[in-house]
Each structure stands twice: as C-alpha cells, then as structure tokens.
Length: 214
Image (tube, rainbow, N blue to C red):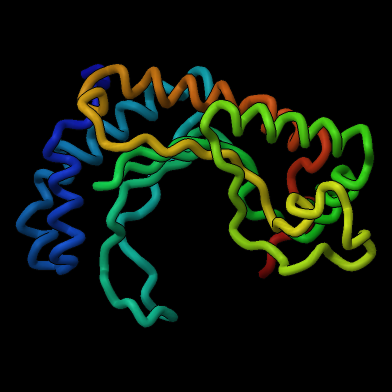
C-alpha cells in the first residue's frame, strides 16, 4: 500500500499519550498506533529508501534508568532516513532534517579544523545562511559555553565552533497535508535541501575512525 500520509488519528494518538503516558493508555490504543502511526511511517521509509538509503525506526520506549521522568513512552515516532537523515512526527507536527547531530571526538576535531580554515569554514558559513533562508534551523546535541581551547575567542565562526555536532532541521506545524501523499514530497524536498550540508560533512568530517568500546 503506498504512503498516503498520516491520518488525523496519528496526531490524536500522540495528544492522548501526552495526557496519559501510561501502559494502560498504550495497550488500549496500540492498534491505532500500529495502523495510523507506525504503519504509514514504515511505508514512507520504504519509499524514500531508493534515493536516501534504508530507514530505521527508533523504539517507542523511553530509557528511564537515569531520568527523573519515568514516563514509559516517547511522545513521537522518529526514524533515521539513510545514514544521516531524520524525521519525527508528534502532536506538535513533523520535523525533518539531516547532518551529524552528535560527533565522536575524532570527528569533532576534523570539524573544528575545517571550520577554522577560511576556505572550508567560509563554505559552511554560506551553507548555513542558505539553509536559514529555507526555514531550517542548525542544531547539535550539545555545545560548549565558549569556543574550544586553541581557537580565538572572537573567531568569526565561534557559534559553529562551540557545537558538538551539526544538523539542519525543519519543523512543520500540524496541517491537513500531513494526511496526504504531499507529506512524502515535503520530507524528500527537505532532505534534498540539506544535501549540501551532508556533502560538506562527508568531505570534511567523515565517519569516526575510533574503535567501538568493548
């Protein structure tokens, strides 16, 4: 069955989950989640895969081991699209973007060196401005309070240097088109718009070379 958007029941499901984040609510509405939330998202990922790579859904369960908030369920459905693409649907709407939200130490070192260079750093400055004009926000999982050691405090790209990752994301408010095939077009167009950022990161940062911990 082709992707035809997320029905209104998908956002209503998340509205209800935000009001009652409990196993009782989840079990009572699990069929709605499967039919209106998970099912369409899986179909969308399948249709995006030929252009952007295989998708992967995140688990709907929160890791509450080290959190004061013991709510058991995430109030959104999120997925990776290919290696660096991302989408999330919640009662608040749809978010789509891509990049390297969290960089490993070796990636972070290469990122900062590229930013410090007038050529590659200036290129990223221009990309960031272009993405902003298209309604996108640059985000990272964390940022330093000041520029990292070894870089000038008045560095022209100080804001970017402070970040420990870099991704571009666009937020779409809830609207009727979310329930149509136009949602696929919006997602694909946003991912295409972030392609220059992905290319810059691939050329100047690349994958981590650190060995996984054992």
